[in-house]
Length: 492
Image 1 (cartoon, one colour):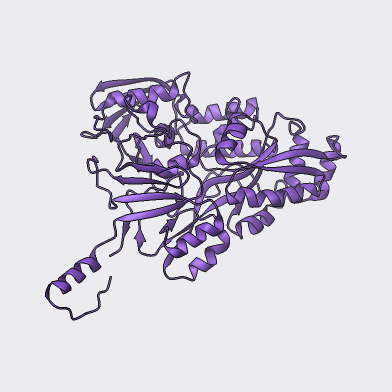
Image 2 (cartoon, rainbow, N blue to C red; image 1 turned 30 degrees about the vertical axis):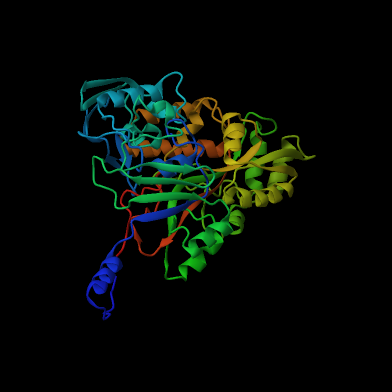
């Protein structure tokens, strides 16, 4: 900051200079959705990690802003030659927010809890290769796998793999107790969550004293809050129509980054008529992806033809597999025996990509004889009815978890796809460590789910980041679903 010379007398001049140079120590961040709880080991909602990942909870490893695996509660590790044994050396002196000490027994508890038969972890499959977890000292943990897992260290960096204490695990949903540089201060239901700096943090201290996450789902309200200064950052602005306005305003920084958010028209593959591949292929031909990107996202988004991020080196360009062709869609519906049309429901969660995109998709499908009843849902309703209850025909959602094509191999996953060949391919991928071999298997996996038209793959969600130009340290891209504020600060 440049301070203009001002003639003031004595103490007044000193006070002015001190206050002018003092860096701001608080931050209010805007988010679209309020998390249903704050325990990332028991919740599927991305909004949970957006508040607590790296800020409140930590894992053995963590995923950095560039997508690489970094040490976290494990300061280093060694891997046996056969790829089956991982020995983790843990941080010394780390404590949970309630004052209890962190040690190897907490790692054993957390990993055994996550992989237990009665586990409620939404990503239980991440732990499926673990055969045994042992503490061989207060700061050493040995994890033995039943088979090699090339993604094991990466998996341990997911929010679902954070380390929790047995003393507080059952109450983390309402009162999260982690080891991170921030701890929960206050949760105003329906409004905001405030974190405060953890003065007893084992690592580098956070540069902010308080961070408040405000929940503003309405695009117009989100724009207004930024312009008024009520929030100083919206890492994922739900108003793409306002991006040009912020780009022209020197008070703000605008960064259009990438995410892991494959946005799809998700389909209940076991519910007639969507159990017929020709019906699913008809929908894929009936939808103009670019029209949805332009109409719902104001041009911000990348068309995709499979469940994989375009920035990934293993990505296969398949977006032209089902070109926009309404006549071909009608012919496929007739071939499937539905020349008279189909009536179905489209359940939409709150994000603007879903609500706006849903209107466009309903119109496009109506043109080929698929009449949709649009049913708006709140996030909690969507989780209960669609994700958990599988009570849906069609829905629109962004899957923001990294490298998550393996969900298509999971038994009883919400879109209920079953293909033994695909499952065998993922099994092979899980035991393959060589990078080029893994890329080849990923490419095969993408082709299979596209050929089966499991879902209609729409676009990769852009990260529309807008924040105060004096803020430093916010992530430009989203390799994981996080608002990591551990290194955020204000310029003086």
